[in-house]
Image (cartoon, rainbow, N blue to C red; front, top):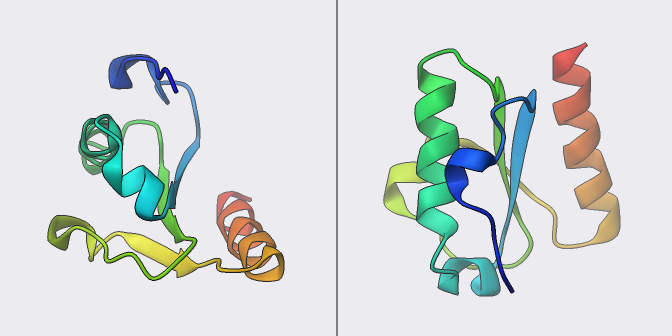
Length: 90
């Protein structure tokens, strides 16, 4: 899969959601994407909301355990997690 440069992602997005699983963990872009979004979030720039949605039991990188993360191993849990994120923006 071909991904855009992290700098092109999320500058205008209000929220950023990473769907965390074993495949994403193997992605060469994952840490660039997450670091970029987290650094902007820390500077109170967009994205204001930052969430990792765990799709399986793949462990989170240690430097992201303090980031909002929810378990979304099935469709219902994923929908609830996205709803919580959207509700926090209202």
